[in-house]
Amino acid sequence: MRHALPFLVLLAACAHDPQLLRWDADFYYTEKLYIDGQHDLAVARYKALQQSAKDPRDADEAALMECEVYARDHKFQQSATCYEAIASDGRDRGVRMRALMHASELRYYELNQQADALKMWITICGLAPDEAASQRALDHLYKHGQSDSVARESMERLFEKLYDADPHSELADNYLLRGAMLREEEGTPDAQQRALVLLTRLETDYPDAQTVPDAWMLHTKILHKLERYAEEAVILERVIETYETSHIFASYALSAHMDAASRLIELYRGPLQNLARAELHARHLPEMLKRPRKIVPYLWTVVSIQEQRGHLQDAMATCRELIQTATDKQADMDENDQRICSESETAEMKERCLHDLAEHPPIAPKEVALAQAKIVELQEKLRKAPGTTP
Picture 1: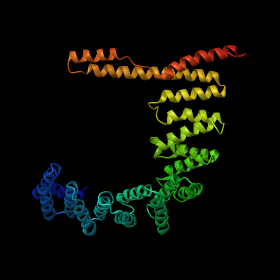
Picture 2: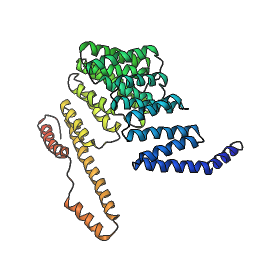
Picture 3: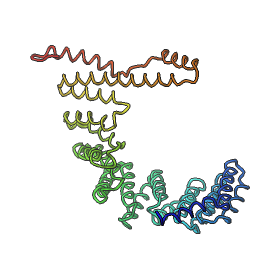
Picture 4: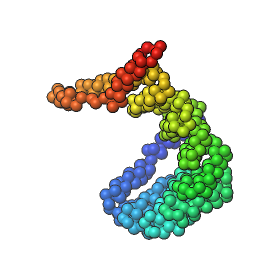
């Protein structure tokens, strides 16, 4: 702590440096001019701020804003040239990549100079694969590949070339995933098979990459189209396992978890004919999602599977659970509505709030009526079945 004190004193002195405070005030005032549409004045002030900045990073930020003013004033060529100057001369690599990204977007979307923009995106991916701008560049390359068949084939080859050039790049797994995505969209049998090869390589060589859940889900989508349902289920089960085992995923559910569980339920109810597994996932889904808003429809799915299995007593118990869940949720909502009314500023506002509640009584989910009717139906089935009691 004794060694940290001089540093803290220095920070405090910097925080109160009149010149720094004046520069910050000028910067924010100039930003207001920019927002207000006073573009010429804003440009002049941003140029002055670059000259007066004590920190090179501040100078770069002022330069970036100067370029942005040109773009907002629809001077796209001037803005792109401005950004490219920063991409060449900026002190910080992150700033240079941001500037190059802005320039490339202007050239692609505003100046109709697609070839130049594509080169810039490829440059960003090669020079700074660890910067956030590289992910954005990759997104643009992928979207370009979606534009037509010629662009798609070009981007498919590009992603393979970039991957082969550096399989250890921070973007290597992304190259494989994006290439597979384009081939899946192409949809031909050869393209689908090539996509499976790329996805398998990603899953095998980069098992801890953040792209793996997306790769798994794309993998299963292709397998489903090919009617390879058993293989699809194996990978979907693997997705579900990450919820149970990962210290990252265990605190919340990814959309991939929900999609995987929903698809497993349909697979096991349909072509794979494993109702026990279907019920397991139907039961686990709402628990995994922390009792979600759609808990009542999820429980109705459980009822349907249990009845399909011939487990009528279980189905009837789940119907009662569904009704009780809906009742409890409504009670919580009623209590919250009453609390909101009680916090009204005046007695008149409170009375009007309560009146509105009375005028709009809650509507029970449709599954409640279905469950009530199903209980009667199941009781009758159990009454007629020999040796059973409802």
